[in-house]
Length: 425
Image 1: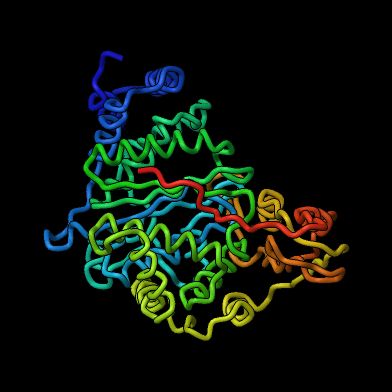
Image 2 (image 1 turned 30 degrees about the horizontal axis):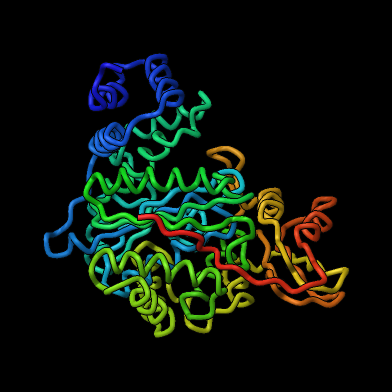
């Protein structure tokens, strides 16, 4: 590897390196890894391969974002970004689409009628300056090196390389011109990284790379064995996000929003510590200010913010987003305590209904999904509701039984654990 990272990235972007040469280099990195300095150099070169957003000097230290490695029911971004804006931060959140069993923030947002995720850089800067928040997709001008590298990684089996994952994620986030970044790195049976040790290694690599580029960065390791919150499915997760923005969200979702928001408020000096920052985020969910930012963003990006208000409920939200859905309720056949809910079983069922895509470019049904009625720790009687499935046609054969099997019901009560397992700085 005699070439510098800058030369390699230039060759990838200009095409002076052909596919075979790029694949050879990717395979070398996959087999041999990179040291910390090389990862930082690669990430910087990738960031600088395209446009980098710039911010007025008076607000540059307030520009923040978060990234999640993805999970089932993971709607943290949709709640966190408006809450951060309500607390005075600037959030130019550039997100991705879902693939496989993990949902994408852009797909969820596009379930809002009229919502436009394609803003030019100037529009992002103007909107963030005006209301403090934009949630958009990646433009052609940001990190073009990553698009070619990712496509070649996908066909060459070199996706699962920590240096390559790190440079891909961190280059896109640092191209936003951030002051601080929070990383939600998930592990467990429904996460990209199933083992905690692998997730911790990726988290540390991304923290080192982003800090090495001058961005105050913290990672939170969180579990993804059970779904996050109660809703799984794009429009359903928007409705649950709005309920959370009204202070009525599921405890596990609100906890992640408050912890990650508290860490970002601390990184930017708005709060003294994570606890004070978490309380500020919690207050924004309960005083209406976070919901106001969300509605302002929906209006700015072409949606109708009037469909969301503080009276939003899951039932009313469903009517607003799609009144044509059928629903099927699954009931418990035994009594006891819910000790586990298998997120992977839930996610695969939702994908089969049409909520996810098996390959890039697949179309999805924004409205289908499930609402989980029984949470871990709940005590059930025979006949109590486990979940409700929202679907179009008759359910696929065996889906009801499969979804029922996602619930483990035990004789003894269990302690409900936090989904936050470690904070890495």
